[in-house]
Length: 289
Image (cartoon, rainbow, N blue to C red; front, side, top):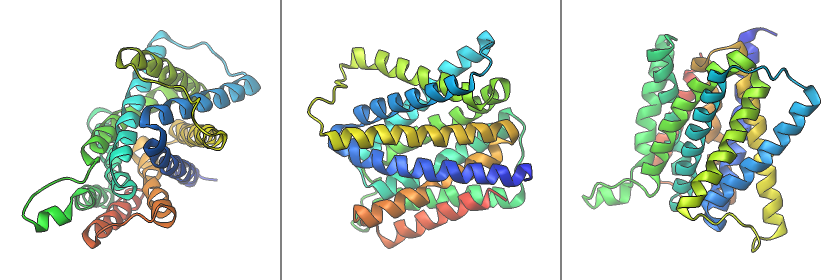
């Protein structure tokens, strides 16, 4: 199998995994809060990747710089998902998912400027479609018709999340090329849990799940395994390809998230927002070619 085809397959794996994770994250962020959803699902992910690392026993001779970059990546990823889940907690799952498509644009922009990776003409068109589509999807059109310009609830938070994710994937690519996908995923997951624990102290975040049903706990833990699988697949892809190709494909996760939200949550979206979502998804697909 060629490197390009394998990269596309791995990107699709990331897309499906994140799409399911984000949908479930949107559901449980509203039920138990964004911080609890993120912390416990990430902890489950850390345990699963740790067990995998024990099975394969990778070389743990890691440069100090990589350890530092891993913790920076963990902070970026945590910040991205804290903002993202907060957006889910406040707003419409479909619209927030569409707005988060901007992370592909940020990733490609940073890859272009700092890593000297380049876009084709079609990919450039795709980026413009993502920006325009996310803009259409994020606006509250009923307010605009009433002559009041207003972003839909949670969109601002989702845009901040997209920015942090955009930086994260370029840092993750550097780490993956140095120590491989398995150790990269393990170190970043460990850093995420450490950061969230530190963050929870001054913020006085309550992370206990004592009042949560067993079914909810099980699904949250399953979320973590699914999301970690998606991260591992994309990190592996980054060891054999470029972020400028793989991450746009993976970022088409909104196809999965929005479809699940419309089917199971009966999310309502206006025609302009629906067109914006379609345009953003089409733009992501275009960036893969």
